[in-house]
Amino acid sequence: MDSPATRMIRIFDTTLRDGEQSPGASMNLAEKLKIAQMLAELQVDVIEAGFPIASPGDFEAVREVAAQVKGPVICGLARCNDADIDRAWEALERAEKSRIHVFLATSAIHREFKLKMGQDEILERAVAGVRRAAEYCADVEFSPEDAARTEIDFLCRVVEATIRAGATTVNIPDTVGYATPSHMGRVIHSLKERVPNIDQAVISVHCHNDLGLAVANSLAAVENGAGQIECTINGIGERAGNCSLEEIVMAMRTRADVYRTDTQIISQRLVPASRLVSAVTGLQVQRNKAIVGRNAFAHEAGIHQDGMLKEASTYEIMRPQDVGFSHTDLVLGKHSGRAALADRASTLGYVLNDEQLNQVFADFKDLADKKKEIYDSDVAAIIEQQIRFHAQRWTLDSYCMEIDSDSAPQVKLTLKHGDQLQTTEMASGDGPVDAVFLAIEKLTGYAVRCTDFSVHSVSVGHDAQGEVNVEVEYQGNRFHGRGISTDSVEASAIAFLEAIHRIDTLQEAMKTR
Image (tube, rainbow, N blue to C red):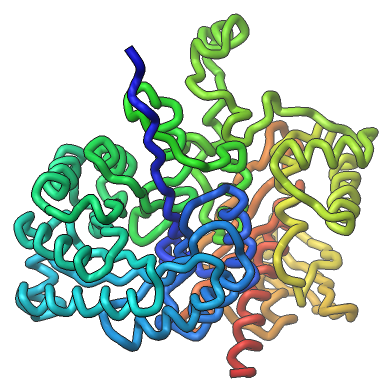
């Protein structure tokens, strides 16, 4: 007897829209374009590039992604009003394939306290919004916000009416992460059974992770007939985040025997995509995160190691190569050449031009003089630091630290501003890192408040590189920076300078408006 045919599920990535709403995860235009290109290489079906009416920066980002990124459908978000929808189309009109995504809350709690509107008025406005969007493009998505908490009778009415008005995708959001898998499954099943024109649209789901159930709820929706999943790289997003793209994709692919579904995602690009988003947003992936975490394919227990040596499938349900990890953590050294480094970069999923490779190779050689063994994670860290998407105005040239047990640490710091060297006299702080931060503030002229600071090891061994992530607040906005070095003080300075650069860039942009 033939097995059921595999059903293809669309992947709608909202890293650039919902993902950017994570506190501290704002991205500049160049970073958004880099991530959008990566998503296209990953072969997502739809990229939600932003909310065009939210700000001039969001509008510009959606417009540039629409103009430059080919392959996926480029989507812009809009509320159900004419101004939002017109602005969305203005941003999307140069896209190879475009979609307008309109939304309106439907749950009783949103109707009463947020919108102060009744069911009939909600229905009328939703239909009007879909019709307006359909005048611009044939691909229209409608989301009844907080659908998981909307009365099922009213939800069915709204879905039927918006499909009749021209919606080609109806998205069922679990906006506050309230649903459970059985609950979400029942909602999708009810729509399939009760909405007479449901076959004229794709059912989508957008699940938040407040109870840690976003992936499970999305899978339950797929089991009951959903054809699109909305998700983000690393599961980033508001509050506890969204359904994780890498987890939902590999769950369906690994358990195809259960779900009989798949996606067109190039899974070997998942780890590079995860690293890119982490580097851009400063939101680090926990070591034990499924699929892309550093420990996802690590085995320490003796029994596990013994089984792995005999047959990998005893303790691994996926091959590390299938998601973008190399088979082994290749060790390079100071005698390794440019070709070996280029090959390793390619294996890790990075595409470097000649100029980038030259710089990465120089940094690789510098690191090789400092530590005996260089692992894949070291190579990835070097590459990510060098392929930043903007030119730093301020860079670290050198520092000299004086520390003893009887007085506060003092630092003499030399920075480059463009091609010019600027040196500050001794700055003292509560510790070496605090002294460095104070010296940088004095040189750059930006007085900021450090709101978060973390250090962790990039690779293994006593000479491992340290990665520092710092978040600072300036004039009510938060900015992050990331630095990597075998010297944690140097890594801290690099991270702080990147945060300062982001402030500098924003200040320049505000002056030109």
